[in-house]
Image 1 (cartoon, helix red, strand yellow):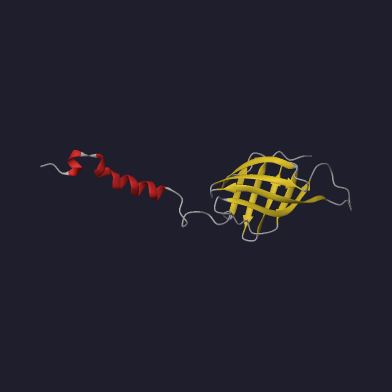
Image 2 (image 1 turned 135 degrees about the vertical axis):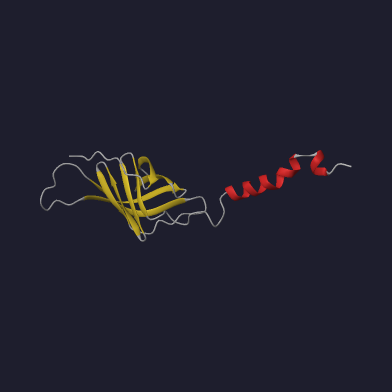
Length: 141
């Protein structure tokens, strides 16, 4: 008499395959609840995340995120901040070209997509960043 596992060899590996599939999928314990603190960088962008906000630097601008960067169950964030255009010499007493914006994006804790959304819905473009990567900036003169 042959056993079920001898007649159907795939049944022997099924429990192992199920265990591996469950272990490799996202779970509540491994999902990020906020953007990890530290340095993030990419082409034309550098982001420094802190507990209560972040600073961001672009080629011709800089900004500040004014709240903790919490994420939803899909890793998306939408936080308020300021965006300041740069370029050319600043005259003494000249006001900064600062605007209120939303910093929106998504992260899995290692990679991030970031957009700056101005009032009225205008977007600055999409930036791709990596955790612990240096940003590559070309500063405006």
